[in-house]
Amino acid sequence: MTERFQRVGLVGRSRQEGLQTVVDELIALLRARGITVMLEDRLGAVATEDCPLLSRDEIGERADLVIVIGGDGSLLSAARTLARYNTPVLGINRGRLGFLTDISPDELSEQVPAVLDGAYTEENRFLLDVSVERDGKSIAHADALNDVVVNSGTSAQMIEFELSIDGEFVYRQRADGLIVSTPTGSTAYALSGGGPIMHPSLDAIVLVPMFPHALSSRPIVVQGSSEIRLDVLARNRIHPPVTCDGQVNMTARPGDAVVIRKKPERLTLLHPVGHSFYASCRDKLHWSNALVE
Image (cartoon, rainbow, N blue to C red; front, side, top):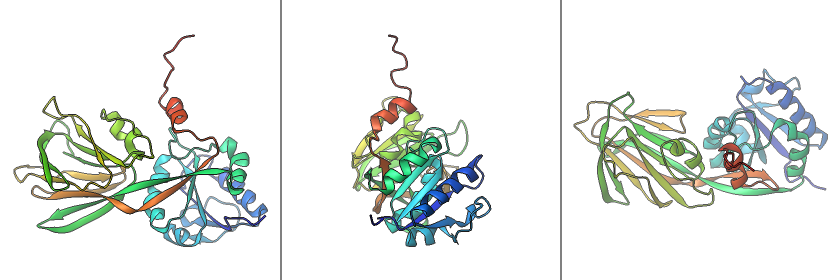
């Protein structure tokens, strides 16, 4: 049988307890099938086997499959790079929740070979493109798989902003900020802010106000193709941070605009056969735990 995945890259954060055991097991498993293994350069000090060390971009260009070892944060970080190369991603969960990285280390020897043999389901997740614009020019740019958060950056202070969608004015708001989330991110920060859980297959974006001054302000779900513009009013005294996936930070000034659109590139996620989004919700969010038989 010819392997679909001839070149596999391993990506992850090097400061994880027990990471070396997982990396070595994966290398042995992959090499036993004649697969070329590439390591992200930061994992060079972890693996005991000698493998080519490459940057994340180089792995995205060369690999047929990337296995991300870590929690959802590790996968979020990798996704923003790998999506542009259309390289499929498989997650080994070394974190806590694991909505994106759904294979546990205990299942590695069973689930990974099954995926390599073609027993998997494939999902496409869209990312957001965000730019901070000043005087009509983009002065900062980033991507997000989960969410873009614009907030005051300080406790007990609000920012005032105007929201427009596809060029149409929606509202002027005083709030701690605004969360703009993909369906992927709807089970993350947006959920904590009172937003809805969205199935990952939806082509939609949710906007969740953070502690709005108007009690009638509620989350809004819009088309995934929408262009979202948040104008930071000039009378604000603070410089609100703009955060992507809780990992990439930019800073806006009063008078700046934050413009958010869907990216044309998508992340391809692979799941073992039998993966269920609803089962993940039951497990990770403890649905039904209150029921007593």
